Amino acid sequence: VVAAAPATDLTAIMTVALVPAGQDILAYSLPTAWTWTQTYRNLPSLSVFTALGERVAGRVVTSGCQNAEYATIMSLHLTPTALFLPGAATNKSLWADARANNPALVKTQAPMLVVQGTADRTVPVQLTDSFVKNGACPMHDTIEYFHVTGATHATVVFEAVPTIVRWMQARLRRLPAP
Image 1 (tube, helix red, strand yellow):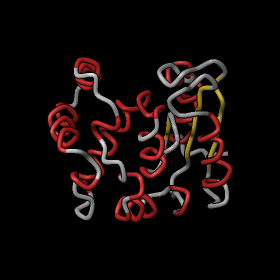
Image 2 (cartoon, rainbow, N blue to C red):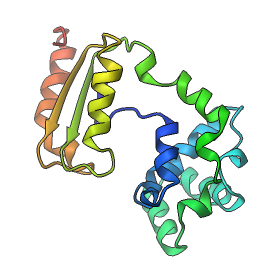
Image 3 (cartoon, rainbow, N blue to C red):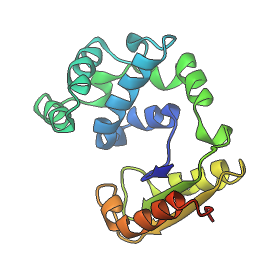
């Protein structure tokens, strides 16, 4: 497994999405929440989204074009409170599904490489540090974790390409992960 950011659970995403800072991650939280509601039958879309949020997510997220998603959010001046129900972050089904899919609760069989930009404002360094320290390591996952100084969420993969390629080539040569 090669990851550019830790897999975060939907409860963390929704908790942040519904506060004022949630506007900054709306283009991330909208498709994440939509895909969860489409994947888990016990999590109907109207238990997470407002009617407007369901219409927007159903139309924009399914287009597969993140630029269209950004454009829709900006042109319609959409906010988290317009798209998500006030109690979405405390939805019991959402929490149950998130717990069942939390990588910190299940050992990952494949080795992982996690690269984190130190200037990432989308996935804060502390969140990734916590995932590695409190989730992956106690599960005895095989993990290599690097901070990429000055990299943002948008640039971390590009700046870490040499590290990622070396790591992947070593796995393909069947060398054990550190």
